[in-house]
Length: 479
Image (cartoon, rainbow, N blue to C red; front, top):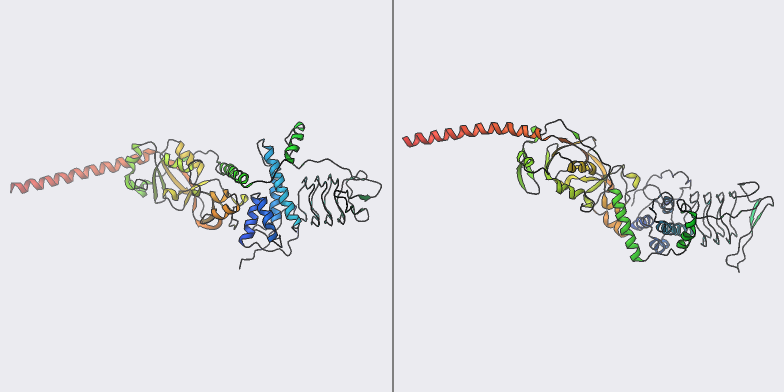
């Protein structure tokens, strides 16, 4: 039996009642949530009939509609670097996802979707009490028997909309006199549309002192950075937006995964500080080379090649070379499973939520035979690009266990891939024995001073031993 969870407070602007909510459970719920995150409209349309109740929630208390609306509103601030066609395409897909959820019974009370284009859609019986639909396009939309009580419909297009039986109690509408009046049932009524005429305008019978203005609108956010001369072209491109084929979806997911990978591997430059300790007094002057599988003398190892480096963490010592480390942290050659991030808290989400990731990319040093440690990639950048060869690793956090997420779980793009990537992978689901390390460098002379001292002592001892042996043999011969 799945554990019940304490219901969390809803986000600002989403005051929808949480009564009679069902908890999230089962693989089908998770896959459905992932499909919304991945803009997988075909999957949603094919599987939504399986759900009799769309109020189930994820670990953060979000319903499928909450996620869909957040994804839609994210388009307002997303930078597409001039690819307006892609923005139009995503707007269409995410709008259709919201439409599909609403017309299949999702509760849209108090949702925030200003400027959305619901034109020519069937939203009969939808629940939109208290929602913000300001600037929306409802041209030729079927809103029969919909609950629009207290809804913000300012600057909304209603041309040809079917509004028979629609509840407009307390709805906020644009008016000429008085401006922005709040209407109640005594001020507004809806005349039933002609059933024989598809697209008949539902006529408003409003007090003669004001009329409903028709304000031309464009989809919210799409034209923010577009010249007016280009608007006609963009509208034409929107008309040609089509449903993705499997090949198109695969290409899109691959492209988006590449973009996300580049984003998640970004890190600021940093400069390492000098460490004034002498760790060789504790770890000695030799260690095991995990790749060469042999013991090496630190003094000889540092002298023989400027690319040879030593990492010292407590009693653990790793000897490597800079090209090897560079391959482990370069985007094109790295092992994704060894790139990890610190999580703020434990979460059961298959794909870690962005706000739960509180660190930049780090390398799990287990790949270099140093266990229980992860190092920020920007510090490793500084190590391999600088002139220093000896590094000490220290940890600042006293916690022995923290939740972490690996890069593949953050990059999972589809429902099949999401399930595959989290198998035996870290995705903030539990705490693991690992700490965040910080690099500092030690000057080579600290090691070389230690080497020369030991070398002088060993030389004297060796000479005395040889002389004693020779004298012993000479006396024996004389006898």
